[in-house]
Amino acid sequence: MAETPTYEKKKPVTVKKRKGGRPGGRSPVPVVHPATFGDWVAGARIRTLPLAIAPVALGTAAAYAASGFLDWHWVRALLCLAVALGLQIGVNYANDYSDGVRGADTHRVGPSRLTGSGAAKPRTVLAVALVFFVLAAAAGVTVVVLSGQYWMLAVGAACILAAWFYTGGKHPYGYYGLGEVFVFLFFGLVATAGTTFVQVGTVNLESWVAGTCAGLLACAVLVANNLRDIDQDRVAGKRTLTVLFGSLVSRILFTVFAILPFVGLAFFVLLYENAYLVYFCLLLAVPAAIIVLTAKTPKEFLLALKLTSLTALFFGVGLALAIAF
Image 1 (tube, helix red, strand yellow):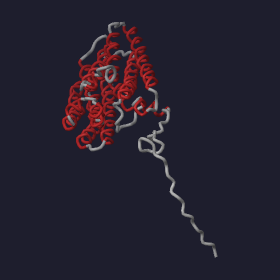
Image 2: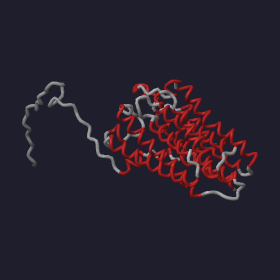
Image 3: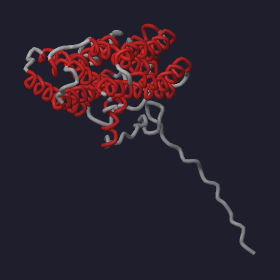
Image 4: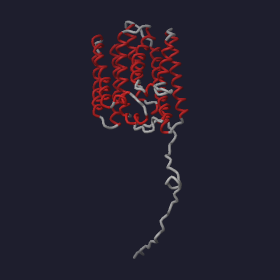
């Protein structure tokens, strides 16, 4: 028969409390791991890159149409794509840096940021942003030299300044409800019309209408992002258009931005026989609008953002193919 164990009564261990009311007098410090390669890739915000691809595709197709479908400058088109992608990734890292050092990401509910989370040093994030701006500038200078349109250097400089001052500087315009205005201009009209102009030296009506459609979809992505962060932006003093207008108006505004490009698509349907196929993109845009109108959690807004970004990609590339072929 096994012996029954006996237990001694032990005195409770006491931990001396110092000032601050915590053991040892120190607050618990969260462990932050250094940013991995995957974290840096996430920091580039890949889901926003379609907003750079769509206007270049549309602008190139419009240039091809303007030349009478006889010639297109594929090297200049690729350089324009490099400019757009470099600016998009650069502005994403610049936003990460600027919002992080301002403390705007302190109460963030979306994916963590490199600077705000402490995973990367602010100077490192800033340096990466500058690298992509430099790459975009190098591609831009090259396409300007090839096209001979040297005044376009001023447009390129304006694009870089707009990218930086979105959340950078003492008075970032993104904090004053102007984000959508600049996104529409630079990721819509300027990107599309600029791509067309450096290839054929003119901007046709197709380019302006297509640029308007691309800009509206880019605005929709931004509104979805800001709806997700509306409460945190209020706390941080970040007065986005969504914070200024409120949740209900912003949800309606998103729906207008997401659906209106398909009204503009009718213009292309009248001119190009395959353009009607782009209406299949409504299979992404309509669910995104329904999600935003009924969403209650940040994850739902993030899903709508992804769907809208895909809508921009398929709309831009699909319409470009319809124009060209």
